[in-house]
Image (cartoon, rainbow, N blue to C red; front, top):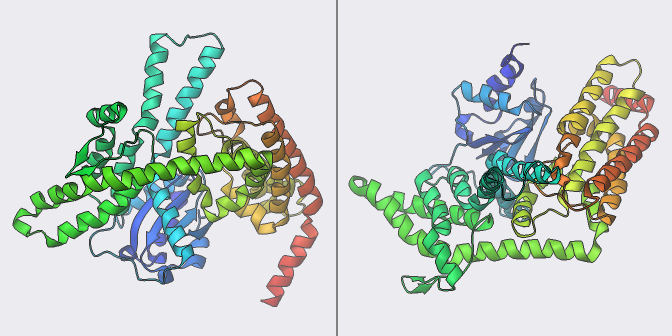
Length: 473
């Protein structure tokens, strides 16, 4: 099949099935999913989307509709954009509000998740790249191929630091698209927090004031929440001034008045609140880690497939970024994620081994297992096999619990984003024994999940249940 044809049907039909281009306010993608924000949820035809060729499945994650595609998501994304109906990273415009819905605690939480995801997901390649640069440097030093005072080491080290340090500017870009702010305004608001003069004033303990309002002393390099919150507010402020500014001078008044309002808000209120939120979030998670230790890691590992299914795993990104910036490592998520990815693969492999007489299912399960074990892409195995038959998913979670207990007890840390498959094991290079204990944890999880899947999955029973459902229908 030629490249592009694979997602031809999906590209042609997905926009109408989402309620038409006028119903879509934002479109982007992550590693394996197409992500849409729509105005009216009722116009989305989930059954029609799930039946599309190239779609593994779809789900709501808050106000965001996600279509699971797998590792070829960029190809699907490009195919949709090529039709010209919608554009990538679409931003809402003034008056382009979603259909009003009753506000609940759940909807507010979902909106927050959607906001964080929309700002962080587009810059994942930057975060992974900078993290892997640091891993390469650690490996080069440990192998004796380079020293820390070598010019190449120094250059690559500050280049890697830049990816985290300039996060506020990066979020200024992604946040401007997510919340409908002019791109230049978003970049400037991020740059203000990292301006050398401001940074020096903070170091000196004299951050100053604006319009007589004292500026709270905080360092914003490598932070996430201050700019996510700033861009959210800036969207409303900019649209307000866009609405009231006279047309002849709108191009001058709108950005000027937006900045005059946002600068004091950012430096005196929103920024400090966001910085405190990030600090206390990290402190809270570390308190949980110090209090229940390995049990907490095991629980996260066990439930990780559920987090992926609900899209909640994206909410962990701000913690991870904050953790790498303040602690230098991730004590919770990385090890759990690697164990979980591998158990999803072996659970699907067990289905392939036990399947007799259904060559299509056997081939599909084998492919899904390979993608999870080798590529670290679990959605095909999770949605296409394990969740479908339920018992393989239960087996994978049992394996997760066993593997999670080991990596929790031995305190395995991840030192960079990445490491979703065994090829990325280098992100666990750090303290003595860390990589070995990670591999042992994976081996335990894989062995337990495989045995559990071989015991729990019964092809005859699954076929019987499927046949009964068809007969009942």
